[in-house]
Amino acid sequence: MTKNTEFRPYGNWLVLPDPTTKETESGLILDDSTAKKMATNVLEVLAAGPLCQMAKVGDIVLVNPMSEAMRMTINEKPCILINEHNILGTFDKN
Image (tube, rainbow, N blue to C red):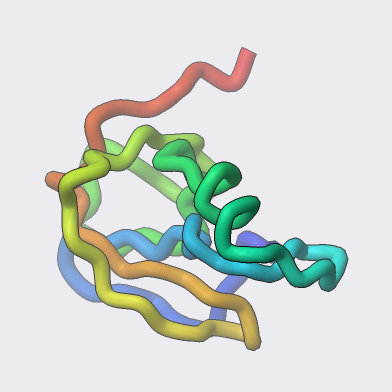
């Protein structure tokens, strides 16, 4: 998914790819069981609000699996919108 989105969140909100999607980027449709196995809470930040202090676009983050998210479609791709306080940490890019 492209890192450039047309949507710019306010405050400390982050846009991430939807980890529960049943379609791969190449267009394969997954059955429920496979989609559930492939779901992850390690995601790349696609857009970040101006008040975000801990995560920025392109960061790989670990999302609290208990957090709730707003689901949306941006550039025809399923995404989630979460508050920055639901991020547990970031991964080094090395």
